[in-house]
Image 1 (cartoon, rainbow, N blue to C red):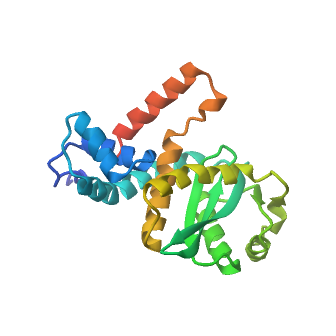
Image 2 (cartoon, rainbow, N blue to C red; image 1 turned 90 degrees about the horizontal axis):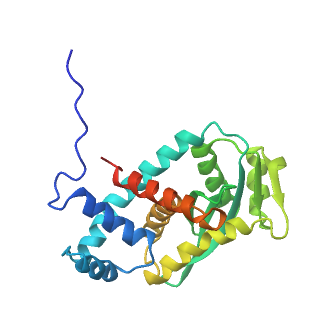
Image 3 (cartoon, rainbow, N blue to C red; image 1 turned 60 degrees about the vertical axis):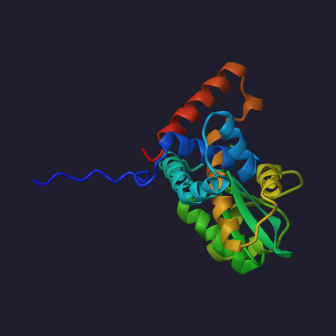
Length: 238
């Protein structure tokens, strides 16, 4: 019986070690740093790479790491049905034109789905909700703002009865935009809709991975959670 072949390493054509590549991608995606900021910080640690290498590595490996993180989380949470989602859309400028970044956030503050559209009508809301429900399964409650596209889309999906709306109820979704806004300013905004969708998806999963909600736990618990997250990061795509 033939042996199953081991999957080829995605790092096999690169001279740098996987540890350095993971560090570069984590620094650029997780923190509000520019490409040259990452280059300078790595130079202090004795790692000499160009800022264009930082760009190439996050474009190449960022989606792989994000997909691995997302797959692991979905497999753990798929059977959980008492979910409460918070959905919201935020304005993003691309070459002076307004686009909309839709987000679904669960009751623990983790970003489930990010989706970019040119409009925020019923068609856009329907595509966003269908994508989120397909990936993560059914949900008990969905908290939205007053945008009329949500009830119209949910009526077609047959889950309008699970919709909730109220003042301050959707603060969790509103607050989830803040880390992305900080990254957007560091990157001097976006120039293409495709690049915005790519970075928003990668950033959401990396943020989820390192989000220990330190304001809810004591210092020792936070340090343990941070160490676990870093150890798991070093094993991505291993």
